[in-house]
Amino acid sequence: GDGQGGGDGRSEGGRVGETARKSPLPLHYVKTINAGRKLVSKECEGHVLTHALTLLQSIHLVPRRIAIVLAGQSHNDAQGIRGGDTPLSSAGLKYARAACQLALDKLAAAAETPTSTGASASASLPANAPTASPPSTATAPAAAAAAATAAAPVVLTGTLQRYVQMAALLEPRAQLVLNLKPLNELCFGALEGLRCGKLQDSFPLEYAARLADKLNYRYPGVGGESYTDMIIQLRDVVLAIERTRADVIVVCDVAAARVLLGYFQGIPHADIPEIEIEQGVIELARSHSGFSCTHTRVDVGTANSFVKR
Image (cartoon, rainbow, N blue to C red; front, top):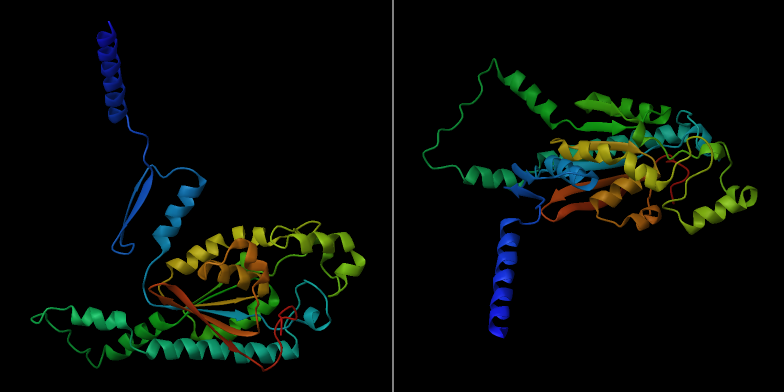
């Protein structure tokens, strides 16, 4: 009797194991081939997997650089007033001209430097491969113009007056200029127009709430934003930068610069509001381990007054 019972148990266990093998759990995955040249995905559904797939479809390893240029001082900045949409002050315009010229010069100098990618591509050609004929005299100017357009950077900035002014300085040497609302300065909501340094005295509860959680604190009133809001809003901007094969210049204020650096440098969200930003040009260069970061200070004129200097 005991043996028969044991045999039934083993038989039942075998049937259960066989059923489990025939009905595996759903498998969700994304497979990248040759550094993103091909993507294979299976059952990528839901919020997280959908956004992860979109990001992986945008990422590439083409050598390029990203220059983050901090916006110049506006008239409101010069008066110590938060927010608003006023044009550049005279000091802000001086800074804007110097910073934009520096960003263009740095990207142009980097473009003239041969990359290891190009060298390896040339070396991989077979010995009997046909060589391209030099362009004729008639087509040489057109080819040179096309090459110059391809090497020109894409400019991304906000829609406020100071951004538009700085974009106009970059436009003659850019292949495309896009004014995107998500790149505008963090909105202070009902506290727009408050003088700098008055938050603690005039609104002590708001000051304490912000100090306790700078990442999630949202300024009160209509339109008030938090760093978390900016991270979400800049998601599409990040995807646009990732998809672009050309160099990119981003003109923005401190909050947007912190969010972009947080993404490209892999900084945890909680630390983004504490990233130190100085006036000048922040240059990100693609490498095999991500993006390297260098900062070049601009001491001509004045940047946004909220920059730690």
